[in-house]
Image (tube, rainbow, N blue to C red; front, side):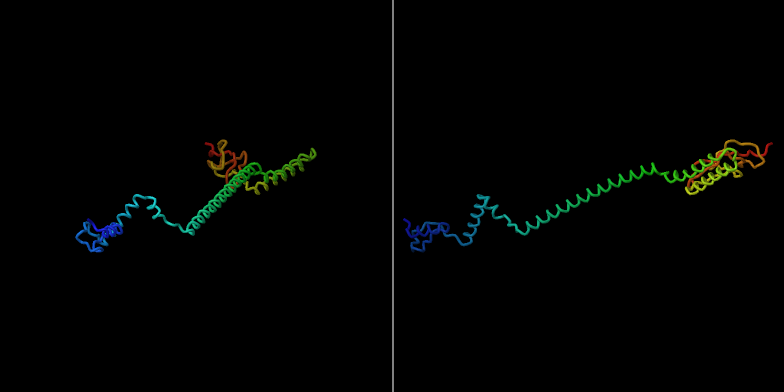
Length: 225
């Protein structure tokens, strides 16, 4: 029969067991030996791990990090700044596209105007020559001297206008035939050396050094044998 004091001690310390020395009845104690402090600590850790495995919600709750309010505010500020930069870049892109489109249309208009009105100055200069021709035709019949003077004045006006627009006359008579500037109509015997231009049908013209019409000429084939 076990002493009631031993049983009461076991109830108060169920994990270590009852201490029989509390009642002095060593002969009647049949419980297990009390655990040491190290054994008690190990058993406590084991129970804590088992409780966490049985309650995963508590485990997750223990590992939740508390985010500082300032950190969240900084992240929001960065996102807002990126949005503003994106909006600015989009606005710049649209403005640049509009400017390039306007530049393209302006260039097309300028090219079209150049095709239409590129000879405006040249046409204006021709009007003076037309006026001189009309005056020459208005000369009374029988007054050939005045007519010739009018035609000569018209020709002089023409030559002056050609010089202003860098149109140069090409005269080939007496020159060595040059296929780059001359167009041979035929060859004929002549006292001039072979290949010399002996006659000119029409004069040639160049614009800024580029040939726009060759001089049509007759070329010597050398002395007749």
